[in-house]
Length: 115
Image (cartoon, rainbow, N blue to C red; front, side):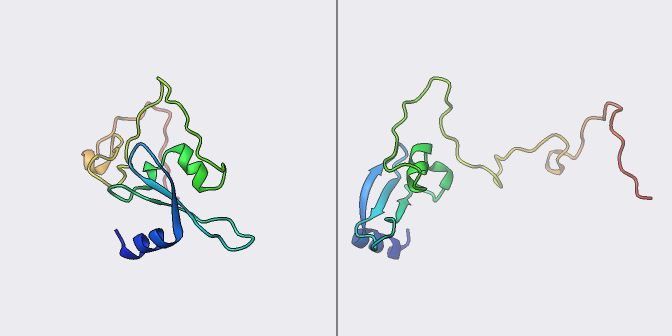
């Protein structure tokens, strides 16, 4: 982690809370007159913005004054990291990295032909 960020956090921030992933959330101790207190997160592990839960996302963007601790529902899936650009990313049928072969069109598709 960047040393300047840690120093700034130690000097100017107060910890508001942590989430289930170990990320720590901070708010500015002494905001300037008439300004909102700045808010930031120190990620645990990789710097992945999709690891911020919805309650903390709302708090960071000033939608709520305090993070709402929502209870987990049985139908909710647990968090999955963003895998775009990795070997685990989704490749649709016909993608070049999956062989480039797609199923034939059903007859309702007419490809564009230049004039």
